[in-house]
Image 1 (spheres, helix red, strand yellow):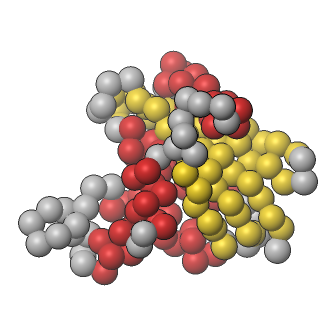
Image 2 (image 1 turned 135 degrees about the horizontal axis):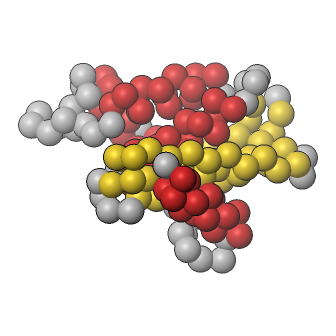
Image 3 (image 1 turned 45 degrees about the vertical axis):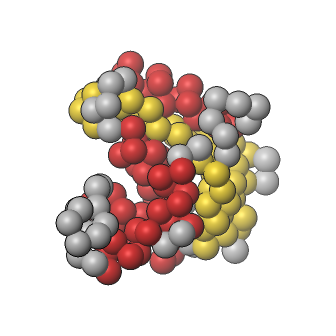
Length: 144
């Protein structure tokens, strides 16, 4: 399996409001940058979308380390929350619906194809790739 590093970030101007996402994929030193935006969305939706779009870019199953500054994304996958929400008909608990079930469903399907390890990184810090994803996401807001 090819080993890929993916960095992702999402951003929103207002929450909800116009949003953007960015991702950097690295394979054997070769970089690919992707980004996009939506007119009306939330920061969390953009964080999940960045991961989905990066994974959907891959043409074959890969072993991936995905870096994100979103605890929501990293913990929902790493701690099994998203799978639990799906098993409970997209309920967080007996009273609260899970947010973004459409995106979680897409992401969970992609995780059946790829071997993905999610790693949290501090946002707006020393990580150049995360900072580049933030730039891509903010540029996408302006273009959406």
